Image 1 (tube, rainbow, N blue to C red):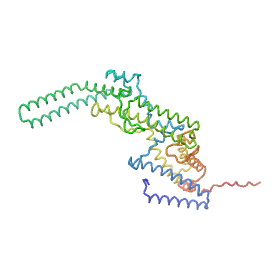
Image 2 (cartoon, rainbow, N blue to C red):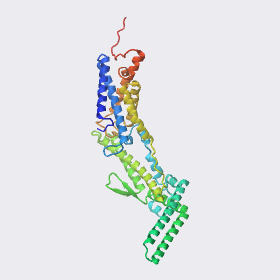
Image 3 (cartoon, rainbow, N blue to C red):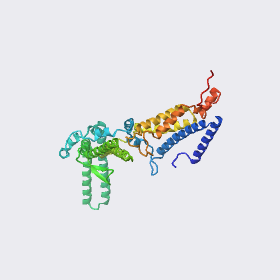
Image 4 (spheres, rainbow, N blue to C red):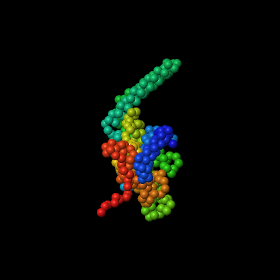
Length: 425
């Protein structure tokens, strides 16, 4: 069991919950309705709270061989529901990044592009990528890096000269050593004097190298799911592979809509896998493009590439909110704090989850789904249970709400009744 709470504390909490349930039922004259309604509320609260605790614990532990930090990204990546697309974009939009940085802005064949001059190739680099090299701040950092390299070259030449002179045995050897050192120092001085021009040339080379990948001239090491080992693919080849995956998704959706293979859930399962492969392919291509740009920036000089500041996406912020939301909602349901309010809030959360991945027969099942739900899944059942609890005064039978009710109203809540009071004629 991977729980952030010691088992002893867990068992004590469970025993206390059961004891509170029994006491509250006794106060309501051992009503079975009270017992089972409170048990339902406590069970849902327990489920919410410890689901949240587990997610928080996984993120604090970090990635290990036995632990994967919680993220809802894989769930939303294949979410076909009404709000699935919106939730997916909270984790970034790889399609937009591909359009801006991977698709060639001009229609030039690879053979023709390879014959262009380096300057013309650099000029054909996608605008979004060129902007990361063309800024004055980046050019200044590149120039500073070249000057720093020149200083290092000069210092290295002087150190090498000193060691060589100590080991030299003849005047002729010493003369050669000094001549070589002077030549190295002159090259370093020239490099420092021409630092601006050298930096500009390196930037052109970097943009041209990226453009050659985009226009299909040069390949980069790529991992494809169905191929063992790495292969060298150009950007157009990567885009062609993604188009093929997209066509597979469309084919499976058409088959599912026609009812082919649905009897055993084969097409539904395959549809989920193919859709996941397609979305993963898009994400990986966008990440590879970013990695290539960073690699080229580093090749221009030390400390030229911007430091990778951790930028949290909206989706990652929502993940943090979700973890703590589950804990707080579960704790309030168990503790009877604003019980009806948190029943409605918890039900709303489950509705949002369902709208991302509805259990419609023509939609693929979400990852790790148990059973074969049709229209109704566990989220809907738990949502209906919470809404039923919101219609009943369970907070007045057990929890903080019950204490406040007794203090403010001076009496205990009555158990729910379904019998009508007879009306006198």
